[in-house]
Length: 314
Image (cartoon, rainbow, N blue to C red):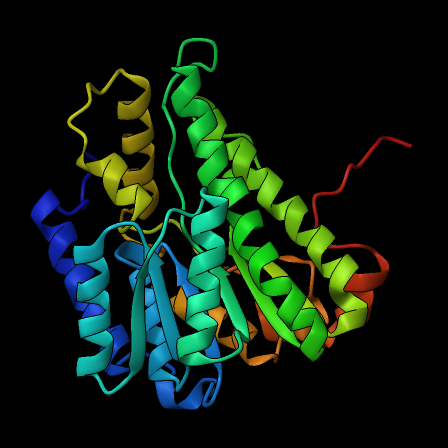
């Protein structure tokens, strides 16, 4: 383990500390009260039972949104909703498999019955998939990651888009990854699915633009919660594919604040509020200066920046 990297118990303590800051609004730096308010809006967060999904759901609720928290695990969902309600927020839990079309349709119909029309959808549910050379990994597990990471995004988006189009407003925020914008050897299912999510976002943005609906793909940063936490929790040999990835992740996190989810929460809140609508269809990272990008939105649009572009030698 690289010098300065916290031990496994420290990862858990750090996650708990960040979770308390998100739920109570006590962020370091810019206060939650200064970030965009979402009063009166209904937001759905998939994969909200734990990890980043819990952080995002709590952050949106703290800013005034009524939040539908979706995941497969009932116990984890209950914990997320408990945290939100104890902080004075409004949230409800729905157990759903985002790869099951009938389950998704029923769930979203019930969310709107209980909370009202959906204004914001955060597609966060995800799966790492198998780790190893793509010709050696289990094909069923490989495809399952595609189903969760891509088909899940499509089914949930397709469930909210008709209503958003009819009302002339709505925002879809898809949690992607730099793995989808750059190669990530031995994690092909995850990388391929996230690349598809970025391109899928571009299509939603273009097709729904005239109806007042915007869409964004985001990189939340390399975090120590959620999927990354799963990788770090494995006691894999250092020379194995998974072991090498875990070592790389720890080295990237060593001595930085890149593992802090509050930045992802702020980015999602900004996009959910509508302040970033001029960047619809773009792939945005927590590392980006979104305010600066908004000032150059015309240039971003004209030159098709922050998309999966093919650049060829002239």
